[in-house]
Image 1: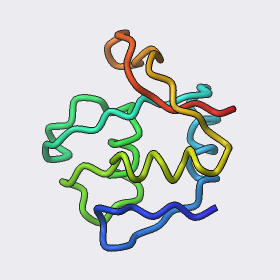
Image 2: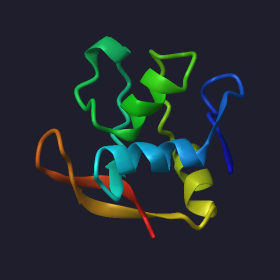
Image 3: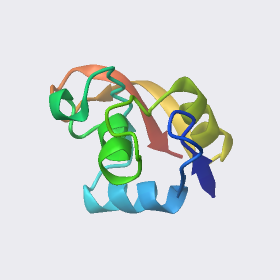
Image 4: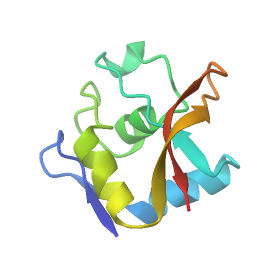
Length: 100
């Protein structure tokens, strides 16, 4: 399933890439972690926003994990939003998406 990055000139990625990433890091969820900073200043390198910017996006200094993007992912039925997943960077509960 193709997911469009609304903030990156119609760049798309296949959702299987995200699922493969979660398998590699041995998690069933990922924090959203949207930050409006340059990629070099991003503080959540284990977040969806960081992953999108560093592996998929052409505009790496633009926040990519937008509400529109999250809605596209949720609409596939493969993920659900969870407002209280443990951030692997901070240990604090935060907003994320998880495999169903």
